[in-house]
Length: 80
Image (cartoon, rainbow, N blue to C red; front, side, top):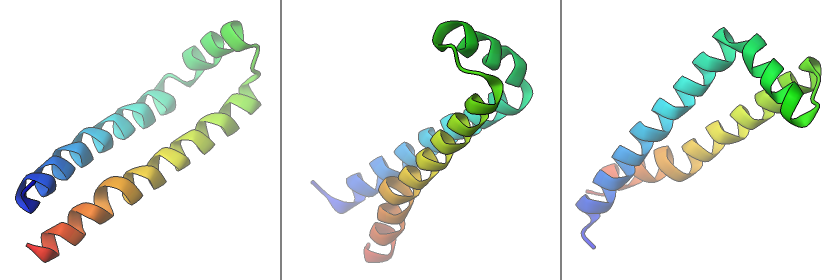
């Protein structure tokens, strides 16, 4: 594969992942009660535990986006 193709793939992967992260953050901020009710019924999770779980999940997702999309993209951009 060409480095330009890989760089282009990483760019669009980064864009999609950041869009999903932003959408998830938006939904968590503005639909917290709805999300808490659904997860409470489905998994028996209380609101305080759910906040910790969602915060931790979003933190891990952000780290994975940076590690697997952003850093390789900028490394390839500087190489090309």
